Image 1 (cartoon, rainbow, N blue to C red):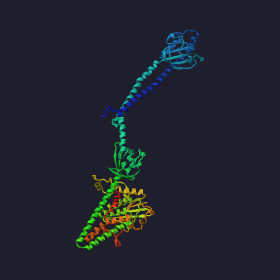
Image 2 (image 1 turned 60 degrees about the vertical axis):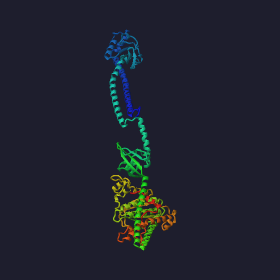
Image 3 (image 1 turned 120 degrees about the vertical axis):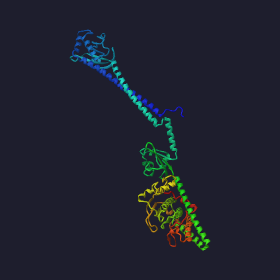
Length: 640
């Protein structure tokens, strides 16, 4: 509980607004009254001057003054000039009407005792022929005066007429307007106060009755929280413009300070990431790829029509997931190897128990010899140990799933890859996808072709006997989140009710990004027939320029035509392939020997080439290379 809580923002605003309204009302009233007072003064002086001019222009007045002055009469209260002046004064409501001669002697005045005396103010200006209008003090107090020269028939100035209006009457006129002014000012003040109160109430609701110090503390806490989060946060307004980006979001998305205020599609550019943040792609835990990062995004709409999106970096998690998938593949290969070894041992035991010792010896010799030769043929065509070990391991998994995995007879890959692990990722993803697609076909088969064009370009083609990719979807397959796998399967993988494909559809997207970074291309089409392929299904073709190092930097025994056995790495891979690949063929041969009526095993799908199975066929292999090469399967990368 807070003791001595500071005043709320709404209270501060209300006080300031009330003070402002009162100040403005007072200022407007003063500004209105000041010119009004001057205007009333001018009106009074102009009125006095008009009376004076009218009196001076009265016919016969100048003659009467001239006659009285020539007769040397003393001004009399009953004289014609006094009588006429008093009549005019009473008729106009003036304070006084004074007629003076050219010496400044009064011939009329409201006070008879002032007759015959010199006027109290300087008559010089009016006797010189000028009209005078002013506020001045005299014997009768402060008055608004107007003086006009009195001329005879010849136009000569023989005197003047001075008229005064009591200034108290002017003040009374001004004061008579004050109540109306105060009424208007009070109404304006009331309206302003009401508006200030309503605004303060609205402000109190919007600020949740917080004080300035509370708002400042909240802003500081928000900044600390946003910039301390391990997740990226992007806030958008109702028009889709970026209004807030924390440090982590700037790092993950590669945004700068200039992104604020720009539409999210303009700041990020076209792509899935912009579609997810703008809400065009809906869902939870949506996976997107930004540069080399794999991100998981969630978007939450806000009450004002905007949205707040959170971003988590799954790059490391995806790498670990790919390693886990590789480990699972290795386990599958070992399981297949165990199965084949068990079949081989059972067959060998049966032959021995039947006393067929020569058949047993021939069976072991033929099985080991054939598949040692098969593994050596694979390593002769694919000199890179990682890629060859990957193909041998994938062949074991393919055999377990009943899919024939073949290597095109024209395939050749020297051991001078610039990025072996990158190619392993590409090959592993495409082969996994092809195995999934071909598994449900009538004659499931997958063919891998690796060849070199020019000095440094590697071309990879993977064909399958699956349903293929429709022409309308051949660009969509490379987008993040696009997948042909069933939602039910996705739901089982994700462990969520109803399934989710949020974490699928990354493999091909990553392959395209890898190829683009290397300056290459990835395309998908329909597999066409050739000498070793009947056609149909899908064909993914990857072209990687600059994938090989210069020939001048490669060892002589690593170029085409050399002896692969001379390369210790190839020899190791070949030996590993022999050890792991023998089990599959042995089991197939044993099954045929034990039961001639049985269906031919997977090894029988290998097309013959002379006196031996086709050199490029790796379907009889049961696992990936030696233990030192088990990372090849882990490097096989993400799954579509």
